[in-house]
Image (cartoon, rainbow, N blue to C red; front, top):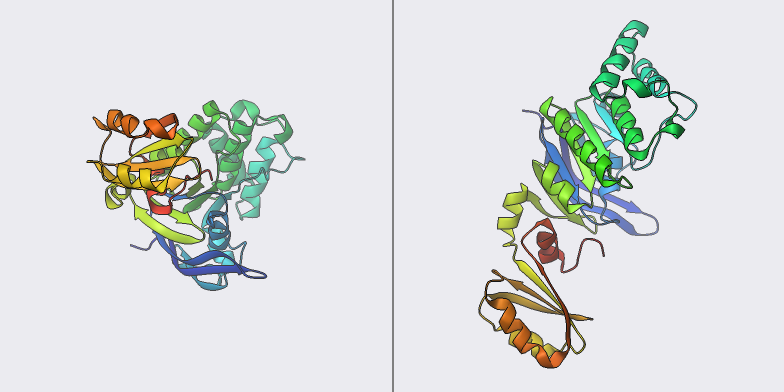
Length: 311
């Protein structure tokens, strides 16, 4: 089976010597949601830019539905739909016109374009918004219209670049439901995000990126097993020290301890019975706060990079 998206050795260097993507390999299968997870500046948007023919790579190869995006960008664009981070709707056109003219641009006849526009307005529950202009829409509705427009020509792959950025929680949940519906319809979706919950909830498989490199890939459950994602205890201390790190690291159940500027981070196999011992050992160090994070994609990321995703 041909992969929906195949990325081999992708590298992109911006002048003077900014390596945005560094030898990236990944594959998106047909009919799955593939999450590309990483902090701002990880190289996610550049990767999507190359896959959607908007950015020329420095090295490597990208294929969409078996088409080399560099050798035949026009053919590749006919197979993909794209929703960028920013609202790109034509503000001089109504919601209906934004979808209709997209259909015409991709070669659909007038009658077919009208039918397809009506289908999408109904599918995305936008019938009552068809005569409105983009400036009259909320962020969540505008994002829904952008997705309707992106899939109007029936692409095989949909690229969503940080689709929930700036959305309120209710709009974000509605977007997640829509992505799940599109996947159920057989569409392959490549989703970039820095929201852990979004990646965990939507992705059949995902890859974690940082500094342009692939750190790990697999299903959310596989990633947690692969890196041995541990319970994380963040101790905010007035007087953290290397000596205290060594003492904490020697405690039963503690896999690793790291000294931070404002405290110590512990990675443990669990938190049962550990907290009382930690509090006892840190009494002389001025323990101000203690936070426990159970195994999640965030703990996977912390384990791989040594820092939090939002840093």
